[in-house]
Length: 273
Image (tube, rainbow, N blue to C red; front, side, top):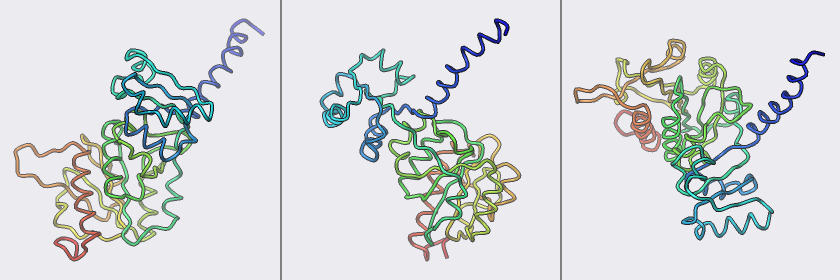
């Protein structure tokens, strides 16, 4: 065995351990995201780091850590920045077991309420947009969020979880390796699929939407992919009256979900008949 092979054999276990650790641990930061996770699933907490200013507010969490022999430590600002890999931690960082997503097939083959609402993301990979949409989904009681992935690891990054302000604990995340196929299956189940695209001819307020419904949000630059468009019952845009005819995708998602939620709660209102 040559030296190169020997070196590879020595380093491979470390690489495997790091990959395993990445799948088994997830770093949450930000007050609302951390406290929502602790309240929803305290058993997932592995380590706690906090600033001096947050020490008193975390009395209950520290007591839990002491009882369960979970490591916790007060850190200075610079050290917290390193642990969180950012500065927007608001004085608290929790290392937890990740919420691993399930396959979209489980969502589609499961039981969906008559007025159920699901959101799917097509080509949206900006963590801030992902997190903001997830927060909006939680606000409107969406039954699930479909994102690209294989379901073997967390698909919502830490920065998106912080932006979601606890929404990660409220909205189940499902993955699909082929969104058009998943949307086809949704339609076969009788779900109405409406895609949001800034270049659509019809507006959100002019189309009839049936339930259960799936709202598909497309990439800001390119909109919905052609394959996804083909699987939609309707493709709509949010109309505007200003000279700038574009919206941030998370803002557009908020407007669309507000209108769709209004229709499912007041079906005889304008646009929902």
